[in-house]
Length: 380
Image 1: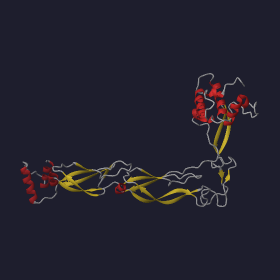
Image 2: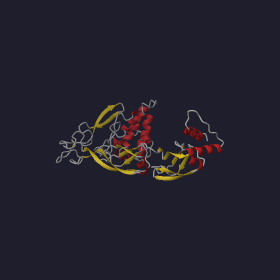
Image 3: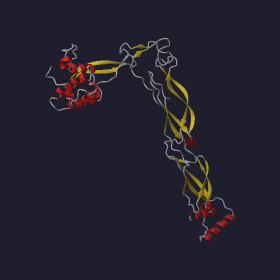
Image 4: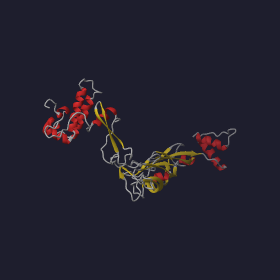
């Protein structure tokens, strides 16, 4: 077989190349020379050579025989093993189908018994007040989830019996089908129709869980909500979702937070806003007022000549940032309040004040004195 090209030369790799290098070279060349992709008239021949080389060099036993005895050894001339060539059943053919056909014509598997399956994640919607969201809290919740059956301990079999290895797939959970195509032998691996991928069958299903190995149960759990959460945020509680299958890990529980609308504060991110009414004298002369915060009461110093609609900021009196950012602020919107009831003495004082400012108080038909005072104040 001296006329056959060296397999290492075909793949363009050195003789000490590891398996990863072999696979990378194969994928690169197979993609380039695939007959459905390349317009080269020699593409089909080249593609077969690439596959033949990969069949040998990707198999440690075949590679060892080839390294020691060359092509003759693979034909059985040196040791009688007769590995053969061409496009028989070999690893990697599924890879090339994945490249060109999106994996639709073959399913790869690592073989053996089906692996453990992680449980589903669950969602729980939790409503809270703004005060709770601001300070963080712990709360006991009740929800349902899949848990391992206490009767069969997750096996699915009635106590005293045991699951048996599936007679069709022999425990692998998969069946193998082989078909010939233009490109050679196509291997199709599908879920076993008898055990549905479990690799075992239960002759006497557990009466408690009907052979599922899991049951839906109601559980009570205490969850911790960090300070500063807002509506729509997710709090992850690890391992409190559905139980896994075949020894798989539990899923997680996600708490979705919903903060109620507050009757006094308006929230904007980590900042809070509120509206505080002050009297005309305070707005004019300045002074200190008490302002309600999420944590209690704070004093706010109002400057003389404050106009209605001005905003004062209390730094750090908003909400904490659950991601570790800075504390929010409390923004206080001041509204100058016009008095609704004045006695005669107060009216005289306002008239004198208006005269000192050079304002003329005129009687307006159809308006009360209070309405006239209100107009005067808003005209300042």
